[in-house]
Length: 169
Image (cartoon, rainbow, N blue to C red; front, side, top):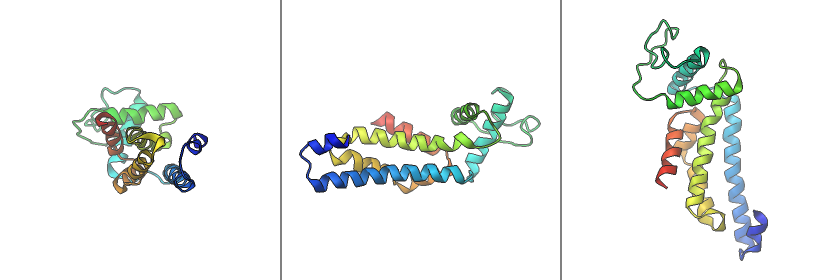
């Protein structure tokens, strides 16, 4: 990738600026992943979703658990939701992949994945690597404060934003 860029008619300043921006972009994603490893989930909504995902994974069934309105089945948890269980099932599948539903583990990286995938979509549709627009657009996408907060908090909105970004571009 870097050799192909260097062969093109980029000046040394443009080339190294591009390298620095890519390193900042990758560093931001690595930092998010590192923080997600050590910081437990703390937001209200993510904790509710993780509770229901743990119940679904533990019972290996969706019926009777979702929506969580029967407190005798859900160990006292009550969540009268009306939306589909897509994000909760994604968390449940992550728990099945890790083989453990007592810890957050793989669930913490769902938002990091959607943030990176959304940035890749923005990168491709803004021009790719052959000009600065793609890399700058992806960097601005990842460094948007609201998206960063959502990724650190393990909230559902980052996956929605990533999917809508892909759908509209």
